[in-house]
Image 1 (tube, helix red, strand yellow):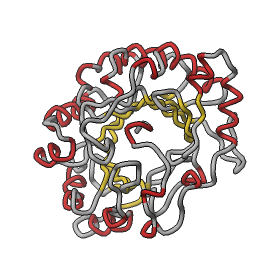
Image 2: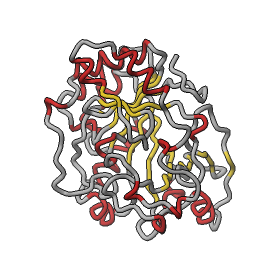
Image 3: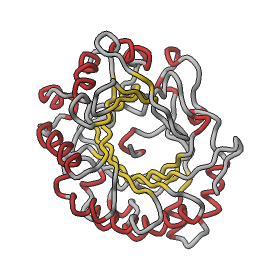
Image 4: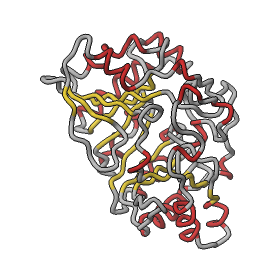
Length: 326
C-alpha cells in the first residue's frame, strides 16, 4: 500500500504515453510549434509495462493511459494490451480523433470507460480551440464508443467568454444520449495564459443549468474528483470538477507518470521523481515511489490554496499540461 503522511492511500496511476498530440488546444499546448520530447527520452513499451508492474505490486488497482494524445503513439496498441494484463481497471483519456482505429484493441483490453476531451459542440469553435478540423470525427467516435457499450465521459474545460454559452447545449445532449458530461474549472499551467477571470466556477455552472433544468445530486464514490448530477428523465448525467473552488485533495488517491518517466505525486507538484533514469540504471524504483508519495503536499502541490482570484499563474512552478499528461 502507498500511503502518505496525511493517511491517503494511493491506488490510482495515470501514465502519459507521449507528450505529442494531433490537436493544438491552447490551454494544453502553449505554442503551435511545441518541441516534443525525442523518442529516446520517453519510456519504451517494455519500460512502461515493467514500471506499471511495480506500481501494481505496491497496491495500484486502477491505471489510466493519457497523453498528449495516447493514441498517436505508434505502439499504443501494444502498450494497451500489455497494461491490460495486470489486475487493474484500465481506462483511457483521449481527444477522440483516432478511436475508430482502436475499437478492437479496446475490446480485447476490456476497457469499459473512456474519457474524451471535447470543449465545444460547435464545429467552428472546435477549430478555433484545437486549431484542427476534426469535430465530426470526434463526434462520430463518441457515438461509436456508446454503440460498443463503453461508458463515455466527456471532459469540457469550461471558460468564461469561450464556451460558457454552451453549458445548456451540453446538458441537452444528455437527454437522449447516455453520455456523461464533466465540466472542468480552468486550471493554471505553464504557458496556458490562465487568469482568474476566465474561471467558470462550480456554482456559476450550476446557476446556468438551473435556468432551464431541474437536477438532482448523485451519490459520490470514494476518491471522486467530480460532483455528479442528473436531470430526471435524461439518459446521461453531468458533473463538475471544481479544482479551483472546491478541491478534492483530502481524498486524493492519484499519482502521475509523465511520458519521460518522471513521477508526480500531484498534478500541481513542482517536484518530480525520475523513475525512468533509475530504472534504466537498474536501481530500486519501489523505494523512490514510496518516497514520492510520502512527500506529497496536503493540497494542490503545496503551491497555492484559498482564493483563486488572488492567484498569479506565473508564480506556479510546473510543466505545461501536455507535458504532464491529461
